[in-house]
Image (tube, one colour):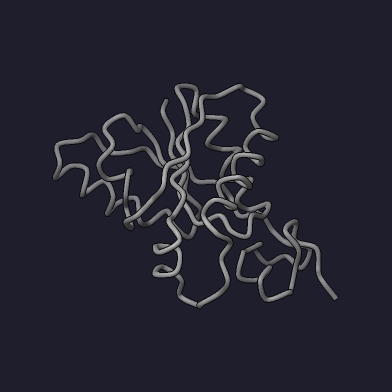
Length: 155
């Protein structure tokens, strides 16, 4: 199965690592990481926050995946410049790894794929990674100084 996972991934945290691990586990034909461009990363924020530069995020994602990849998968990082990007128009992708929060978006992606004559994607839902306080780990919480990348409280 050729699996995609998409996001801003900055700052990188254990929730992202969970997404990558699921993509690697199921991506026996390869994994593509669709990494939002700097412009798209700013446009898609519901709350403005500082986001590491694209090249820094590529390096962090590549390093994290290398550490997690016990299957020696073929990995490709692509720049994502639109909301649905490669998920809606790449015929080779079989599945998309999503979080519980983004899982509902799979229906819209599959509608767009069908309009283009492509097969729908399977969804692989990765669970949230929880911080020590029981709430989910998020980049927003990290940037706000509440927790570190592993979910430990910063006091």
